[in-house]
Length: 374
Image: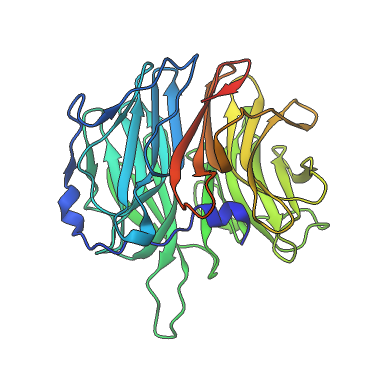
């Protein structure tokens, strides 16, 4: 699995919690709020833990999800933070566990994947007032890996519970007109980790393979013949029915590249690659106007140093963009979201510089149109 895939697959907290404990997640104003300067200056959420996903609809509305605390110590707690244009506010009193991915269809319609220690995975929904668990999701999924909302519909995917032979298969769930359905997919044990929804009848799903929804069925998609087995991390839509995906070769985890859907075929587009380093790219986001961001992490030869990577699509090639200096010894980026050419968020984790300290803090960067800052 690529580094991008690993960023999304974490060890679950060891403190048990019943899923019913988040029937409604409190959003009381000011409760445990962490303020930061305005978005044009900085946006660093200083709590221990990791941010695994981010989504936004405007400069005054963004969500970040992940976990706080330390999984190794058994005290990790789900993290949901909201940006209102002036500050980040942490939603208080969340259960133990983690939230791995979020999708936003409208300011009053967001979905996120949650995983508690007891009871398996589940989906939570934001209705504009509160976060609550959707208890109508069919109980067929042992692990959820991706979710996307588009025009009032929702897709979620993951692994099924092992069958008689002990193997798990990919499962696809579809919510339409307020009801969930289990949708057949071509037989495979490969997980799907990301979606790119162009429309309700034109959706891509990627992971250990690439699939396409045409409004009636899921079909395996064809990649360029020059590409061997790949793992597809983040995916995003583009203008005029196009799409992007970050990928890496299965046989050579250091071979990271992007895939571009032109509307007719997938083509391979290389990433710039620093000499002697391995790169893994996770989140990718379109910028209104036709360009894109993609984020990830670069590891040195022995894997002891992690550096945040941010690339910008110029229309012709991927171009590295300078990231701000930090006090962290290692920085990893997991996801990115953009609402305009001068508003984007990149999220992940930073590890302190003291030797063997093991402290990880949530890491959030903001793009103001000129530079990334935190």
